[in-house]
Figure (cartoon, one colour):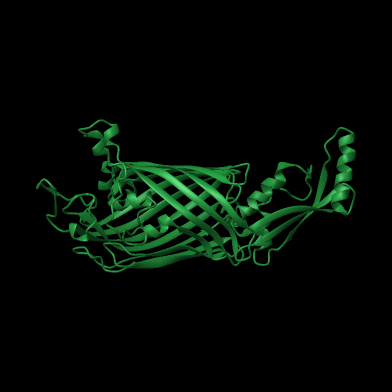
Length: 461
């Protein structure tokens, strides 16, 4: 009846050559059994008292804003007849999703580490107030590498959005890491035998404090200050015996003893995706500049620039095509753990878990370049395409499922290799192929990726 009234009024207005407009008398919210009403209200761009047409973009933008919170699996808007003719009540219907979810599940085995495990857990909507509380840990067995010790890391993180009702966001984190990373001391670069590596023990303890601002409807600016105490225990006189018999001192990329790492980072985020979890259109871009300087009280000086761009294209037959470009460059002399790690760019390798590396495996070097010698580098780039086939939407326990195929190229190198090369530039570019395919499930307890790359990165082969 209400829709018939709206359509009848609209037809009459169109017949007179004008756009029908309605006064928003009130806003009602349905389905929010856990989330506080004000958390939803502050995301709406429509307010009572506004006079708008039914096709005004503010309605769809309001739906997007609420959906982008990540607390709901579905958000729909509808109209009810108001108390007078020409007035409507906007009804916002939400379907809450599980907000206590697994952010990560860490487990695996490699040539260097028999097993590691842990998980991350987050409450995205603490007390229904939109506050995010996250904790994570990972522990690995003693590595089968000389001087190797048990590795462990712990993380606490919280975010308070819209502080005192404003657009300002406050976030803080605390981390503790006791690591034992691996550096080659002999053998071919393609060999991952733990006997060819030497381990160093290092610890990191500290945290970060940041503030975020909305600078546009779809964009935010984040400013973070990080402070960490670092301690490294390096073997004296360690060398890498080259295949030609030459002994080269190992560059561990970190000073022996105690040091401080202080950085100031600025991040620009722009998100126009149709859905924050299973997007089918739109894009997301992040650009970050992080500066470490002795002026901030630390011992390191470097500038790290990184960026990530991904765009989603809906296809007419219901599938989705996505493109991604990610990478960065570092100027200066950062500690090794701040450099780009090959496992974080190649889906076929174990990635770092809370900053810890548990593997000696090199990149597979499918194209026969020098990529198998790259681990922690100053230049990194990944470009990939992904084809997504939606399987289902709207389940009660599993909200959605997608099959996907991702194919990409990675590039990693150091500034010295580019500067002092004995081959052409094309021959000096270390590149490799990365491939992943499988099923991605969005469930009440988190997102699970059952894929080839996920499996190969967690087992010995």
